[in-house]
Structures are given as structure tokens and as C-alpha cells.
Image 1 (spheres, rainbow, N blue to C red):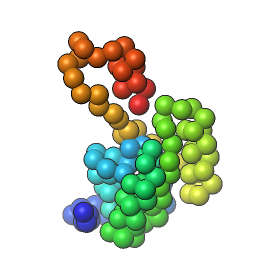
Image 2 (image 1 turned 90 degrees about the vertical axis):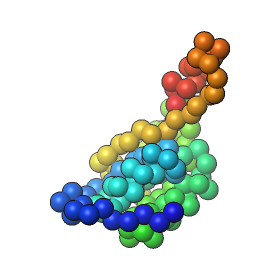
Image 3 (image 1 turned 135 degrees about the horizontal axis):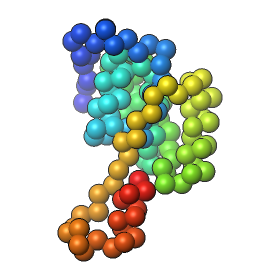
Length: 124
């Protein structure tokens, strides 16, 4: 899916900024990454599925000519999060913007959701 530059986006120049976006390979995370990229922002997409992230990063780079790179981490694992933040800072120099868009959905009635499943949804 090709993204286009938003009209009037020049007033929101984000060149020289870097955004770290969890859940950035699809859905709302990718839409927010595209919005930032359309304003010139570099994007670091953090997902559990690295291949999806690589595809999304390549799409952002192609559509907007910004630096976009994919990373793999489980956001419920503190050590993985700390490691990916260091990796992003090494690759981009700094993180200016953080968007936490990672999420999971366990289908079913809320009153039938186990406490463990509820806690997992909240962790992500």
C-alpha cells in the first residue's frame, strides 16, 4: 500500500527527528509512522515479527525517502525493550518521539477472559 505526502505537511517539518513506534508494521502504528515519515521524520519500527517490520520500513523509505528501519522486540520483556532502545539510539543517534501502538486482542466476552489473558493484553 503506497502512502502519499499529506497536503500542508511542510508546516510540520520533522526532518532530523526520530520516532520509535511499537507495533509500527501495520494498522494504526504504520499509519502514524507514515504520517511522521511524510513530514521527514526517521522511523524505527519495533515489532515481534521482523519480516513485517522490514517490509513496512522499506515501504516508508520508498514512499517518503526517510530513514526507516525495523527492529524485533517483545514489548512485555524489559530486557528486550532496553536492548532495542540502545540499538535504535546507536543507529539513529537519539529517539525524539515514542509511540506505543503495540497491542493484542484476545477475542471473547470480557466476563469469560481469564485473569492471565487480561493481564497479557494490558502488558502489551
